[in-house]
Image (cartoon, rainbow, N blue to C red):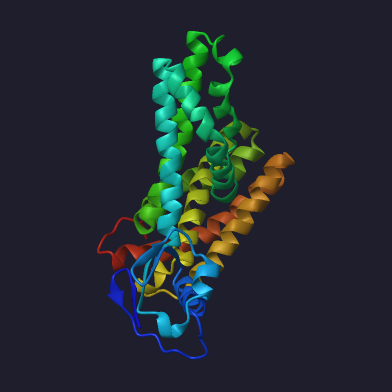
Length: 305
């Protein structure tokens, strides 16, 4: 029996496997440990449209000549999902801009599937306060026919904002090291503003303080997402890191941000000031050290010491 994964032959020792299904299930366990998923499967040069358990179980070991599998990393699959959303939003933007009702109606038929993907994506990865259900406005003929120029422009800008957010996430997933470094540089640049926050709150300059905190929260959320990608897909091992080191800092930062969001919702300036002064600022230098090591591993510099 010959087994290939992404056209590369692999060694597979039979133990208690009796059917093709047994073999595929064991291979799948190994593939999942590598943060990947089976994309296509061929049995004896016949491609299966899906992993048909009944068909695989009916083929005994003696009747297997070869199994060919292609796999895709879970990260690649996630990027692909997000890219589908961008393609849909591009088509919708163009169709609304041209007022092409026929094409809008075709997109409306695709929307239920896209809506599930969109809701799932924003729930899992995004923290922006953005009502993505507004996308469906274009499919409501009575509402759409009453749009004036300003409403249409506002809707197109909204689609552009959603697409921009998704594209930025694609960048974070495809280039987590680079995005981590770039975001850390931005946080380093606004550090002096953060240091002023407690004083601003004490002197009644709440609005200025909140602007600094909102910007920091946006950048920190991006840091947490990119750290999550590095942890999940073990990129850090190639950079000489212990995953536990980054996971510890990731959890600490995530916890502080959660407290900060809660302090915002309760309009508690004293707690906000304390969190910034005693929790957030002391955690920046350890964060910069992690990022600096990733930079150095990639032969770049730029995070202030």
